[in-house]
Length: 366
Image (cartoon, rainbow, N blue to C red; front, side, top):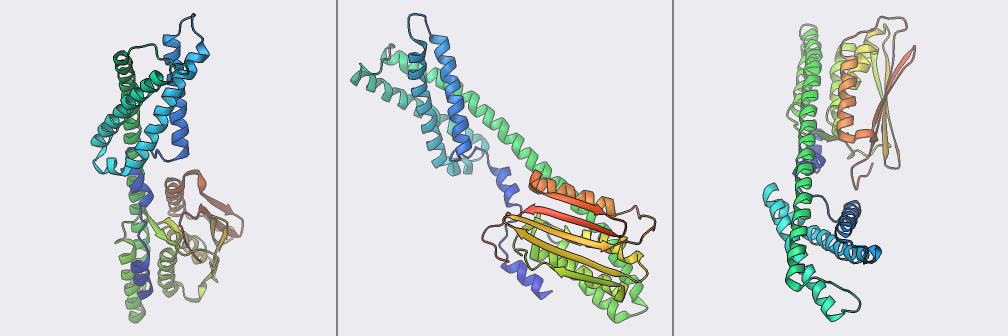
């Protein structure tokens, strides 16, 4: 267990980093290319609407559209640049203050840009023409900009709250799913220890120590994600507990050398699947068998396969197996979305579960 404790101390804690970051991000990432492209598209749509509203048959629509587009697109680009620089400082003030300050900054920037455009028109009157007076142009720009920016910030605020509620709901679901798995494991482990208490007290004591270490690692762990190293260590402790009960009937072959041990995976994923392989496979075979746990890495994709023999023609145990698989599938969906999969292959003599998921960790080495 010293290795497990050492791993806990040395591993950087990225737990729930993606969820926490998503939950705390109020403003979009204005430095990201997709955000800038959306801002430019919205700006051009606003320019188109403004041009239609002010257009008269005496003027060229395309010329008016080009002049309005130039102003609005410059405002959008400058707005993204400013909010990109100040985003972290704005979010530090809290959601409401962040949006109010962003609105004020964009409004001031729009007025300054309007003033610059009017002054350029006065200097280069032959190239750019603004027919309004100085005051009327600033007031009109301020009014239209205030309305458009207010609608935009309102939309961003609603989208932010929706995004935060989705993340918090996902975290709550993960916690609930973990609570379903842990009592199932504890029940089987206590039965194992109870069966050893009279027949072999020394081994029962070792099993209690292993169970204590395992509960300390799992029940005391509030993380949504764990490293593969931690998951395999938890599975190894569970293997020792089951080995005491099944003896030579249980063998587990580990072929996981290709996996990056710092890669992240939903906590307490491997142990329930290993438990299923033993409970629904090895335990029902008179002579026991071998559970194979193998892993592979292709580019940024990881794969872990847990395969066990099954008793041909034996009635299926309905409890536990489907629940654990359903829980793992839901947790993978919450953690990775469509980028991960839990595949099951149920043959006549073998049952195989394969986890496929992205290697989201950075700077990992096997």
